[in-house]
Image 1 (cartoon, rainbow, N blue to C red):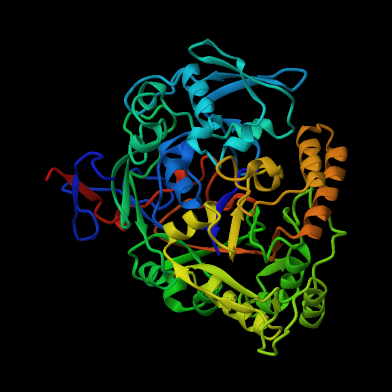
Image 2 (image 1 turned 120 degrees about the vertical axis):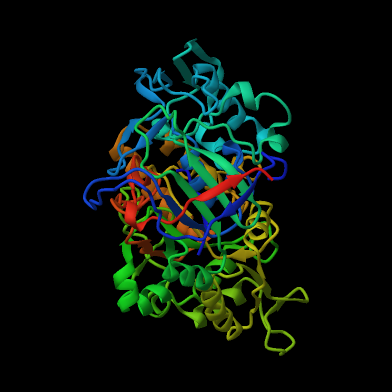
Amino acid sequence: MKPFLAALLTAGLLALTACARTESPETATTAVVVDDSTPQDGGTLIRRIESDLNTLNFVMHNSADEKNVLSYLYDGLVEFDENLQIVPGLAEKWEVSGDGKTYTFHLNPLATFEDGVPVKASDVLFTLKKIVDPASESLQLAGLFEGFNLARSRAIDDRTVSIAFDRPKASQLLSFSIAVIPEHIYSKGDFKKDFQWKVVGNGPYKLVRRTAGKEILLRRREDYWRKRPHLDSILFKVIEDDGVAWNAMKRGDIDEMRMNSDQWNLERASPLVEKTIDIHRFYYLGYNFIPWNTRDPILSDKRVRRALAMCLDRTAIINNLYYGTARIITGPFTPDQWAYNPSVEPIQFNPVAAQALLGVAGWKDTDADGLLDKDGKPFQLEFLIKCGNKTSTDQGQIYQEALKKIGVKVTIPCVDGATWQSRIQSGKYQATFLAWNLDADPDVFTLFHSSQFPPNGQNFVYYSNPEVDSLIEEGRVELDLARRTEIYHRLHAALAEDQPYHWTVQVSTKWGVNRRVKNVKESKGFGLYSWYPGPLDWWIPYRDRKAPAVTRKP
């Protein structure tokens, strides 16, 4: 599982400034044949990102927005197709040893970085060394390569690399859907500081500029080694507020965005939207959840976490906030995955029973002030919210009112996206509303294993349970699917009992795309992105294009 955080998720780079012309249809002195059924090269796609990025260093990235930008700058060693099957990327073929411990990849001889240097086996080894190096703080990726044996791994030749592990892992091949960074660039200087915004990729686009808090411009590589994408450039605009983004979408200032459920419900049938926007609705491999920071004195008691879960009316939230376009989930796997245990019962909405359970845990209103207290301290919780995310704000207010009725005081401070993510990753929070976008395999090692507290992994709820550790370790190396399914069903039940997260709902994603963008397809489980070729096959008819962003010297 390679999860990505999402909200219910440089200086001195090239010394370039940019001036964007007024966006209007392109003109030309030569005649252009307009044919909306035949892909045409050129044009700029304008995409929304929901929070400013913290880095474009692939090894250190954590968020879905960072992943979206990086996917244009790097090709994976292997990749997923629209059916979530592994297909060649930088590696044109591979072999796995009989014991499942060694993977041999043969790199495509045409693959190059944007500076023209071929992608080499030594670059693959260098990337893996950086991922597993604790100093890199690769929270997103390090857990995927637990057991990597550097001593037994080697570059057989420039195009062939052998990667060894101490033990087999059922999902290991899927973990190699990673970028490969160039050793001749990233081995020089301070890896964490010097490469926050400097990118030398091997993908179809290269970074032209980044304006902090505003936008990122990518330009297509003319020397790209695979099938070149149709679009000349990709312009990402940072728009944190959902309402501001939706108004920009309706004006045509951006070409795509994730819609919240209110926008979908109110506007999907409006004449303007029907005329200009295609709305795609699908279930991601992912879910919404409330992480409970178990290091917090209040939240360290699983009885308290369960009682709090009993005060969230998920049926009402599905009907009122998501207009019936979501489903209740009970654990870390989605209902479409084989690992999901259907026998785990959802926690029912029952505030009376919740208050009684809190009483058993020692929380009672001893001074009759309307607040529960224990050892002289009142029951107060802070739910951290990302500003501009309407769904999280609405859900927080509903939860706040429900908990007030049983004697729990809730505050809902909002912070900008970068601060929100930083506080979560550093453990400086009690609870928040989050979503995971998941990879194709249900390995939850990086999320719940006790060895994966930050900076080693993504266990930022600081959850530790020896039984769960053992099940995770057993399940990730079990190659027999029937046996592995049984292990993961037990794991699902154990996590549901302990509630390090309150798994809330799986919401069908609503994504708006301007109708000028053609050949937009969906993948089951991944939606519009994170599969090949996916958005690399999108194109814009000549007559529907806007003037591209122009980069000029200051």
